[in-house]
Amino acid sequence: MKKIFGALALFTALATQSAGSQDRPTIYRGGPIVTMDGDTPHLAKAVVAKDGKILFVGDEKGARRAAGKDALIHDLAGSTMLPGFVDAHSHFAVALQMAGGLDLWDKSLPLVTDIASLQGVVRDFIARRAIPKGGWVVVWQYNDEALKERRHITRAELDAVSPDHKIVLLHISLHGLIANSAALAAAGLSDASQPPPGGLMLRDDAGRLNGVLLEKAMYQMLPAMPQPTAEQKLAMLDAAQARYFAEGYTHAQDGATSPADLGFFTSDAARARLKIDLALLPIYTSLDALLAKPDIQFRTYQDHVKIEGVKFILDGSPQARTAYFTRDYERGSPSGDHPWHGQPIVSQEEFDTLARKVNDRGWQIFVHANGDAAIDMAIKGFDALGIKAADDRRPIVIHSQFQRPDQLPAYARIGVGPAYFSNHTWYWGDVHRSNFPKEVVDFISPFRAAREAGLIASNHSDFSVTPLDTRFMLWTSMARVSPTGVVAGADQRLDAYEGLQALTTGPAWQIFEEKRKGRIKAGLLADFVILDKNPLASPVDAIKDIKVLETVKEGRTVWKASAD
Image 1 (tube, rainbow, N blue to C red):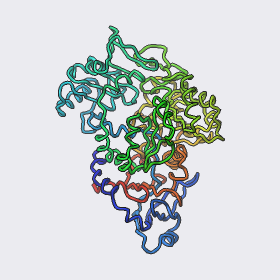
Image 2 (cartoon, rainbow, N blue to C red):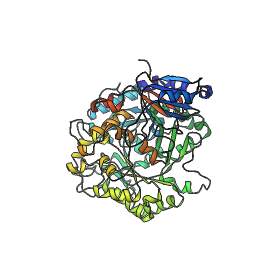
Image 3 (cartoon, rainbow, N blue to C red):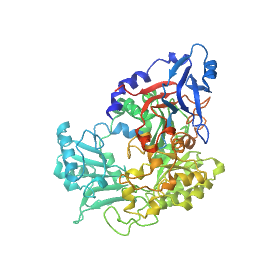
């Protein structure tokens, strides 16, 4: 975080530099250039970029001939250049919303290991920020599985921190929250409140709300919470872009775009400041409003932003025990009830009906599905629409976490692109083993099996669910190991080149941009990331320590690591 914002001034200067340098071609040479063009690794000696696109890829002699006498030279000095990383799924808007809240990932904070230390960090934050009585305290990255008690903090325990502030802890999954009494009251929730279909409101032994609101129940709290204004979002936009550029991303995704954020990101003010390509996925709950706009354009860039498709949410989060399975959770429901295999967020009928409206307009369908029962719903819905791989509609099932082997042929038949999430093997592999058998957990994000089935997969961070860290993502796809050293599916591991495909060519294909980005090839965008080491020549354990040195967007340096 410190590195990112320390480089923000540099990002601003680089991103606003004049276009004059683009009048002269630039030759990149002096280090390995991994083109990602093809199913096997290919290295080029030199690349020429001009006017935002790649002019030439090949040997240095040919590059100098193609570039002419006035070319600029970008000496890689032994570092490795790849195509810019393409974000397969994250929540770009969260990078704007987190400002002003308490981020439990902040390494300057005392370590949170139990409920008492969590209470202390929140209490100190209120005092340090001098938040007035009646004010909101929003906490990000709350993780009950990381607490010694292995349970949720309660409304009463948050009231003990401060009954005079409205305190909300957002679960790390982004599929739930915990609120104190003041926050519940602000949202108009009482002990008599009932959860909507697809939502959970947990209660204490006396039947009172204990503050835990999951899935659709949390939606009743969100409107009451403070929302940044368009002016505040605009002020944070450069920092958000710098956060992605620092990881080598030249393309970002906002994976569940609210109507307010849709309006903001497509506004003239935001478009004037966006340097990163940004794909928006409006949430399905706003579908009627989208359908009422006959002139709305999907998959068409306006400057650097486009509306890519519509996002559906079929189930919840496996780490929050709200994902929808055909088998029961060993630990039961979030409130400890047995048997429990989760529940869908929407009914099959509702999904089928809404998905048909999207498909009939020719818009791309994105579906959040974690548990195998939710994946069954997605498959059934696509089949009801008659989608076939030959149609090239490319429906994307985001996460596809607990996929069964028998579901892979259906994906291939339909032409589904699975957006996998290898970080789960590290962050929650041990948690999942407490709920499901080894053979189920070993098939999390089955990259190898998907490749063998002919699928084009991608890998993502789901930021802010896990940190933006492209090299760590590459490592988790190769190692698939938990903090305790338990490997989840050694037979599903990728090698470095395959893992890089899931960060470049795979996600580019999933958004119909394989002829625009994801490879270093003549005619494509001059989007590059420069690393201090070559992932193809690095031991697996060293992959996560590779550093991003520079990010280039359409031939311009938009982020560069500071000297220290």
